[in-house]
Amino acid sequence: MRGLTAAQADDLRTALTSAERRTGLRFAAFLGRPVGARRHFAERLHAAMGEESPDAVVVFVDVEGRALEIITGENARLRLPDGSCRLTAMSMATVFSAGDLVGGLLYGINALAEQAARR
Image 1 (cartoon, rainbow, N blue to C red):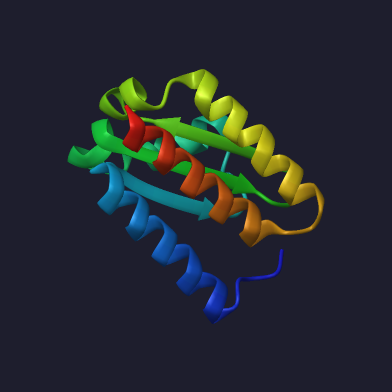
Image 2: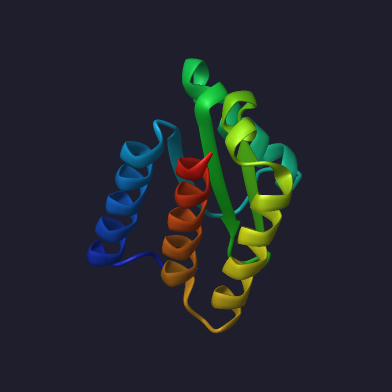
């Protein structure tokens, strides 16, 4: 997997910060290979957010494995139900399939934040 450029990393950080400001939720993104089962790894990333985990949204992308997980804490889930996350993940996957990893991430983070801000 190729790494993000500095500009792409800045764009991603900006999107995460903007999502947090708009919603009051804690957003995080992780790109890489899972250690163990993908879903369990994403859940461990979420749990590692400690006291923030109830209000957290973690977007995990396994680029090599061509997989995506969106994990929400119990408070975040009230504003981002599984169905909404599933639809966002499908849209992100479409952008990813066109070869635009960063575009898919930016779209997904913004879409999740918009949905959470409306509830």
